[in-house]
Amino acid sequence: MSVKIIADSACDLPSEMIEKYDITIAPLLVYPEGQQDKAEKVEDPKVIYDGMRDGKVFKTAQVPPNYFETLFSQLAENNQTAIYIAFSSKLSGTYQSSVVVKNNIEEENSDLDLTIIDSECASLGYGLLVYKAAKMVKEGKNKEEIVKVIKHHKEHMEHIFTVDNLEYLRRGGRISRTAAFVGGLLNIKPILHVEDGELVPLEEKRGRKKVLDRIIELMKERGENLDQQIIGISHGDDLEGAKKLKRMIQNNYRPQGYIVNMIGSAIGAHSGPGTLAVYFLNDTNY
Image 1 (cartoon, rainbow, N blue to C red):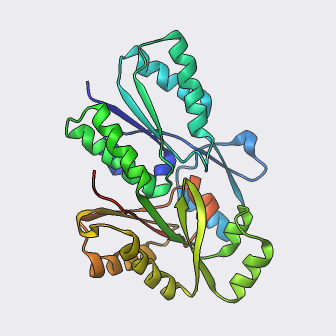
Image 2: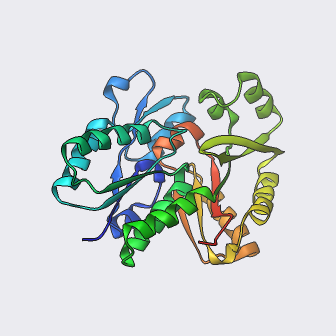
């Protein structure tokens, strides 16, 4: 029996890829502010982006523990070997919750063959890990081989992204109200990255063109063998911006391929519309 790959909805992989590789997706919850008791998965992230443009605020919640209880119990009953690659523990409590559930089930059922990995990644940076694992399953690799490669990838996955409106970062507590106001007046666009699983400001540029030019430069400074990689590009309901970024990357680095997708509701509820991000490895020696 082949290895089952499990991930959170925050991996932002295209639905056709999830279906092709038979990836099980654990749903993070998204709900309008003040309606946590009615929390439910928002299937269409565009609903989130349109709502945010209208001034609505959305909150997110981790995957419910009872979801893991059901899923992990089924894995044990079916003697199914599995790897659960979790959304960064610095951005969600889902990883810790899954570990607690796993430990509880193992006390009663020693047949559970499950490895849980904290991806320390987000969106398609996380998705590229999941894709790699699922691809290795198709190639017939065993769990130990897959875990080794995924642990390498998570340590060397670059996330370089920018947001179009600082107000969304302010709402999420990432910057102050004053910084958002001044930045908006000056057309300041931040460049951020993920460091040890957390979102960290990197640089600031004035205007979208300078930001995209700098992202291309950062890929050269930080990436390795970009022409041999699958590059991830995600966007906050800005397909034209994603296409432009892809053209710029293609003109400079000609990578092996791309995964391009809209940022899902769980992350988009914090980053907001207009976000653009690129994901790649800084070490391909694995």
